[in-house]
Length: 121
Image (cartoon, rainbow, N blue to C red; front, side, top):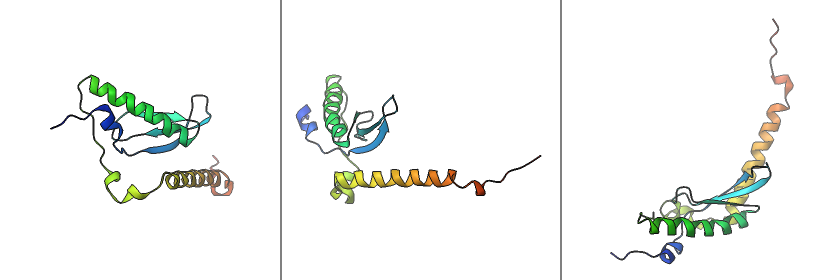
């Protein structure tokens, strides 16, 4: 069996998840990660920046595993299934719609004082 090089692993198509997040100062950012590479993630001010930063994180992550003689997981999961045809922009759009829905629902919950029962002793 031929051992894969860093460049071989970099060419692999790992699943990528990009979700809204917050920097420590509370400002909006985006977190990108490869679920098959546990702990391999990055942040950016835009989804595109987070994805670009993830490429650097992936290289560092895999090179560290190789230097330590540890196994590097190969891609598996939704990449090989039906979801592989979903575009990045579609996934980001869905995430944004879910965020908007969640914010709307929270607003509705706290905007209905008539729904709250008051108990007087």
